[in-house]
Image (cartoon, rainbow, N blue to C red):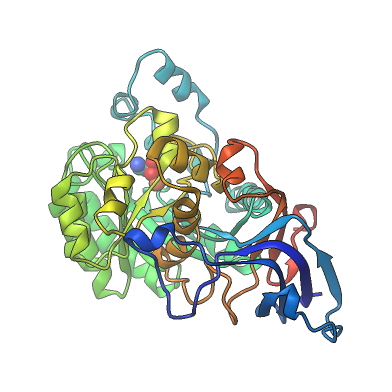
Length: 419
Ligand code: NIG
Ligand code: FE
């Protein structure tokens, strides 16, 4: 069943040539599409597509035909930043924030990431795996066709490895590509609060070698921000990871102008994520780099912090990627359709820019541009069939309501109940 023919597609959008790995600046507003189109999928890959006017009805070797009249067919979202593996929700902290405490105050008092770490330590690998698998299935049904998942709620050798093993098991069963990121440097555990060098040593000498030996991570991430890891500490950690072949990602500039962007660029990071505090200096620094800026509007929405100035960044010629940041503390939501809505309503991106930021640029941020992120012959057939709609703008317009009717993954209609 991984051969499908989609016909009478109202608009086949997000078509790109294989050479395009990401979109920057003014290119982000462009959305290549064919109206009244067909798309054939063979062996799970995009085989061919075109206008119904030139449709050759001899194409009957396909096993299944789906009539997409009035609908858009788009590449699946690629969510390049999530913390999908976690123990429990943290709604009590949410209520504390409603009552006036800040995210940083809660973290300082042992809540936040440390709270998640305490709960995760008490859960078995199987329990974590089962809960994350259900979340993954939900996200695929909302249109996500490629995803990155971070560790970072372990904060000990045993529990970071446990998280990464859960992600490895998810990779084995997942119908969509998953990239794993080691985020042991997410926060300093209580025992190391006064001994930062000791924790950094633990990461470098004990966690990293074992992670690499077991092939548990594709990337290394550090929360480089005020109250968390300094730029110098981040440098040390990323250099150690690079020696072992792990490319860098950074959580940076969420809580202040703290040099996260500069540290990311200096370490040739694949991406620098959050960016709520980004000024001209940071933009200039990114313009001279291959590092993808990733904004996480769901986090700004939920924490009530500023939105990353992505309008300014795109106008300056930068590429911009948007991701969910799905996690129990700052963003308990992984719906990429909502990310697109926030991008348009709060960050003033056009629907086309927001879709490019969540598809091809998402794929770039996790090195999947060759496999995902656009309608391109030979790429994985991970595509979304929308509900009937006349315009792409309907996706952000109906905020909070997903416009996905079917998610097709490697040429199969995804059914979360069979996963
Ligand atoms: O990306 N900012 C750092 N880490 C996560 C939140 C982690 C948490 O609060 O559990 C984020 O927002
Ligand atoms: Fe995050």
